[in-house]
Image: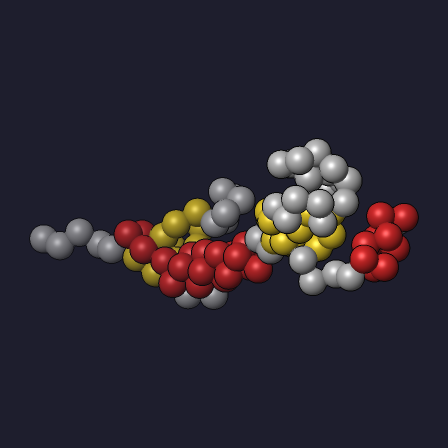
Length: 101
């Protein structure tokens, strides 16, 4: 005698799928199928990669070059301690305007 296969409704695509193919979503509240889970997980990975952008800074005194996450406010060189930093693609005039913000 075969056991009946239990099927559950996916909350994203509304397909009935076997219970072996069901996962909880990121919030842990909805049951979704493997296909929807993988689709949303891969989309989140792509989004998180885009968020991880860095600015490259250059010290005008010692020439030390380093990176920090985009939007970080850096005022002094981590190597020599001087306040003569600029983003690598900025000119001296745009640095002064940037620091006034």
